[in-house]
Image (spheres, one colour):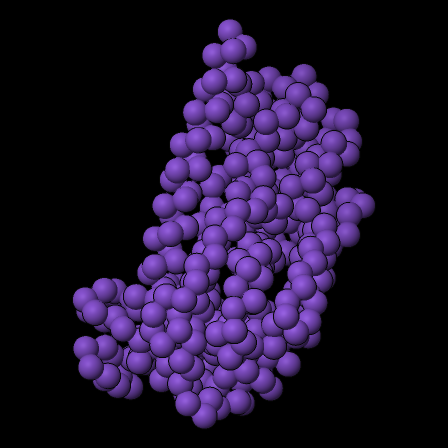
Length: 361
């Protein structure tokens, strides 16, 4: 799947794998009288951390008559869940019909019937994407040596909400603030063929966020803006989170502002204070790569993405208007907008599904 964007200054091209299609087609290749596990499929894709994602894709499978998701079991030999009609009992019945012995909800002698990742003829997409992140992280790290001469007057904040569907539907909201006032709002809706996998958020959210940013790129204030991303920058397993990815693609300063910490250790013994906020340095690989900013019991994790250094990132986030909120107002607003559209689009989808169901009766 190739996505192209033409911004004012340059063109961006992204080639992303359609993991929905890749995984479902793989299930069709499971040999007769064989089963596999979520972990084995994840290993074949290149990262065991994708195992939970495989489970979610199985639960979403609406073509259970064509795509044999019942042949995917747990690594401890348990047959696991089954979202198709009949539930677990139907899954066990289908496995027995395939001459796979099941006793007390477990496959008997799983190793004998296991189709392992070594036998799956599939390209290790996640391993390849991981290498891309590792390679580009060097450029992101070098770019974060830049110190802003002054705080950016123009800021863009971004957030993405999702409708659980097949494929997922992403609602991306990006807001351009000029001198702290809303200059323009961009909301886009996109189908997403890359499910959530820890450490690979950029490959899921790049498409919807770039769609929205592309709509803002014709505004003169966008040219010298700094982009705030709901996600990580350098505070990432490969030091290349979504904020770093977007910053390098667009050649713009970006800051990651996340609500959960993926990696790193917060130095709680070295607190500093700014107004009603306390902030602590976060160390990763013996270097300070971000800060935990705390207000009351709420925390956000700040790290530079690209083309801005750590001190400037922290200074900019602390300078934002927080009011009595748990996080900066600039980050809350796009979330509210995306959530609003998600709610109403979800209702429309349910109403349409109900209409089709009534017609079929």
